[in-house]
Image (cartoon, rainbow, N blue to C red; front, side, top):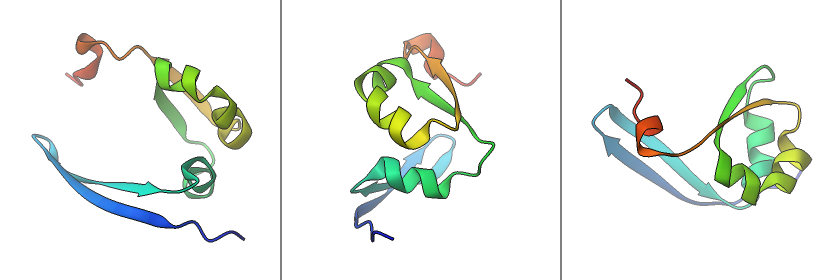
Length: 77
């Protein structure tokens, strides 16, 4: 097993609360080991297009819901 180095942890404060962001090497490999098997991924369509090869190589078993990151789609309400 490869040890994946965490480069930085950042706490983000939003109007909905605080959440943590982890910046690390080999993020796609790391995600594959952390996400429960029946998880659906909500992915920005542009990010998916840019990293399609990595998504398919590491996260192909997960269902993906692609969204366009427009201002109207960024609001959960």
